[in-house]
Amino acid sequence: MMLSQNLEEYRALLQSGESSERSAKILIEKSAGAYNQTNEPLYAGFLAVGQFFMAKHVFNPLKKMSYFNEGKIMLDNAVKLDPGNIEIRLMRLIAQEKSPRFLGYDQNISEDRKFLTAAYKNSSDGNLKLYIKNYLKL
Image (cartoon, rainbow, N blue to C red; front, side):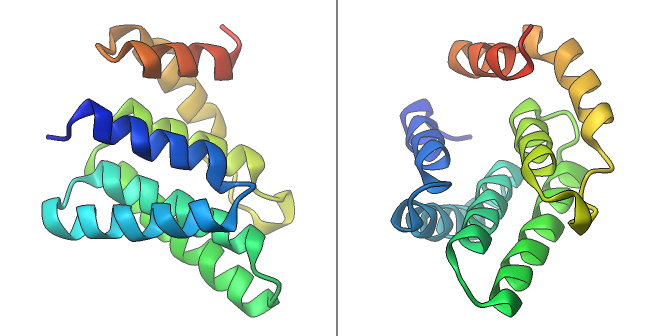
């Protein structure tokens, strides 16, 4: 399993990756390496979010769709591999809520919100618990 300081680094990149192409690229690079080493679905989730961020940063419409679709497939797969992981479910919820509606990536929003509302209290990770509570405005 991962070290929490390592996790904090990934979370920091998640927070800056939306506005920083450099952070998005670092997130992709680090999480791809970690996923290839460990096969942990959580790293696939971080990698998927990096892909979504890159879709925002590139200008070529075909590249945008390519990054978006890769991220979507990877994130849904991470949820399938570890459906009880609240951090992966949070990533999918945020990705779906932030995706433009016309892309049609919004089918799990209510399911993920319900799951997170019920499950976040059981997390032993205080930072994650607080983040989810604030994100869901609980």
